[in-house]
Amino acid sequence: MNKAGKWLRNLVPQTALIVLSILFIFPIIWMFILSTNSREDVYRFPPPLLPGDELLNNFHRLIETIPYFTNLWNSVYVSIASTLLILFVCSFAAYGFARFTTAPGYKWLFYIVVGSIMVPPLAGIVPWFMEMKWLGWIDTHWALIIPSAAYPFGVFWMIQYTKQAVPVELYESAKLDGASELRIYWQIVVPLIRPGLGALAILSFLNAWQSFQTPLIILNSEEKFTIPLGLTNLTTQFGTDVSGVMLGTSISVLPIFIAFIFASKHFIEGLTSGSVK
Image 1 (cartoon, rainbow, N blue to C red):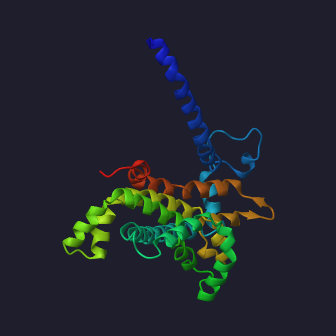
Image 2: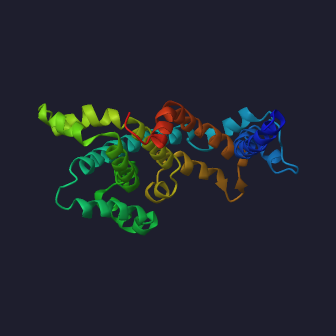
Image 3: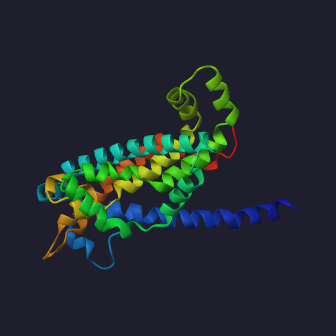
């Protein structure tokens, strides 16, 4: 095939990728643009496609209407705390499943984990609320952090990754050297499954950050709201402050970008790794 033919063959997929990239990126760019325009300009036709000069006014109105930075901090520490708890519980459970494959009841426990993935979260929302009420965790962040550790997909994901990343012979040699189970888990298994933990960390952080339903059910005090719930206070009987919502959302996506930048290497490696290095 000549150079012209190769160029035409590469042009089609490259053009498709550029078009798809623009389609995915444009809503984010437009969100930033709307956050700089006034409430009146947002509703005009055609809608604004260039940045405006109302950014500071929108920011002052945002922080005066809701405790924005308090809500933002709530989302940050709830997301980080729940993510760290998920990483520990899921990796420790995966170590047990990968290490003791001949233990009594192994298959039944594994089937329970897989079956739990199929259960829709809404199916257990009433028992969950009753349990949180019995524990006295209504209107507290404990209800958003502790139950999140029960993440069946995270356990299943880490089981599969641990089985691939850690050879069985490594357990046996470490045991012969006198290492305890906790030492094997922390000093041998965790370093080898770090890419899988990175991928799980990104998924867990995103799930916790964008969670709306559980905070809506459990939280009553405005100063304890997470950011998705706090932004709903910009909607009143007189309408929605679209500029404020867009500005608040624009600021709130920055921690997501930061988290992905720090964990992107492990995230990509965890999704693509399929062999022991």
